[in-house]
Length: 316
Image (cartoon, rainbow, N blue to C red):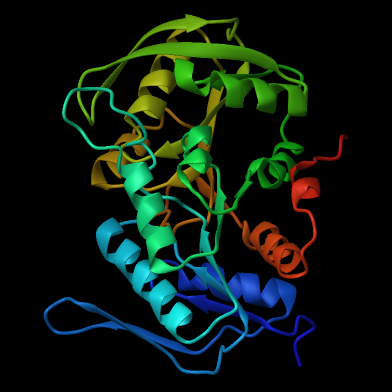
């Protein structure tokens, strides 16, 4: 018997192992649902248990294939709404389309806002997500958004690093706020790599701000796909005398280009979370679990408690 009556958790196909780990962490069985596709590719969802009046949480990252997993989530929300769920929370560990959050050139969409509208129109009552690419995406929703940070999970891992000559570095100007927060959190120095993007897959690092000679550098970012920014930053950091380079990235959506770049050895270790499924392929990739963090947030939302304390990190 669950210690959280009325709480139901279901999973799509994007990251079922994470959903199972969340359920194990909080002692709630994963709900029975059929989430499959017709031969023509259309998604089909059937919830196989009674959820009338239940507090339903649907776990689904919008990782590749992004459109398919997003559509699965929307259909799951609609199914839960039509099954008379009392409240529906979309648990999206990785929120796709987040980089399309503004009009940075003529005649382009703001797709992050479109996705927010779709989730609301489908019937979601609230959203639980982690490390959004841009904070303002929370304002795209007209429903409550609980935005978690992976920093407490990373912090526990960073405690084993030698902090004597540790410098936290942002691989671009946009990540300086995150880098500064991590530097304060672990008591390290702060640096910045200035970059110029040549294309969607190619980045050129042009300068380093801060002292990194004979230092262990920790690059921090929220998302990487081709690892172009990270490897370009690692290359110029090593040219400036860094003795080691690690990278901590909340969401790693690695493609073949990324794996090839990581094999170059410019990055000694890539530290990430299981917000999306990831195969290390024998590379020095450490995957940290956010199941406990998400599970605790789900329990607190279910019991109408504050999730603010989940942001707090104990010092050494």
